[in-house]
Amino acid sequence: NLQHGLQLLGESFTILSKSPIYQSHPVGAPGTADYLNQALIIENPPPFEQLRDRIRSIEDSLGRRRSSDLNSPRTMDIDILGYAGEDLHMLADLPVDDSLGTFHHAAIPAALIAPDWKFPHTGTTIDEAARSLGPAPDGFLPVS
Image (cartoon, rainbow, N blue to C red; front, side, top):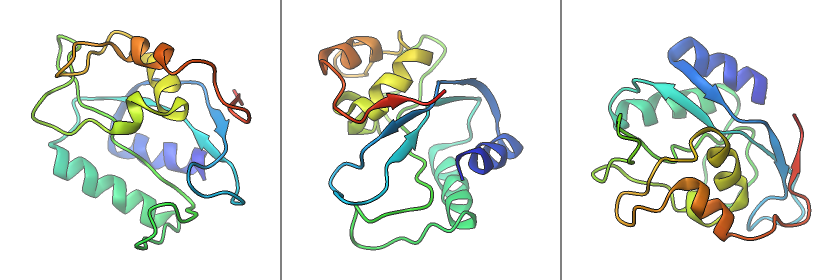
């Protein structure tokens, strides 16, 4: 599904950069299959709501079923980690996904393609946030 998801994203947006793919154990859902994680930079994304709606459409087309359980297994999960302006600062008026500064599976791939992007309220770079997480947990492995 990851390759198909990338294809669908590429049909809707210009992808400027892709991180390597990492495999990780699911957070909060022990016993479910491992996830594949990859970060992308999209050129000139549409407004947040339009981007979110298009991403949800792609997830749904790949069999994603939403439930009240935020940790339920899913066939595809695309997160918008942050928006950055030309100055490499993430835009303060748009949401920044908390996982970007708290989980290796989000921070490390993002740091590989946008290390100098800065969190809007702290000025910390994504690379600094990723390094502050310490060693990667067991099961977090590069795939490509």
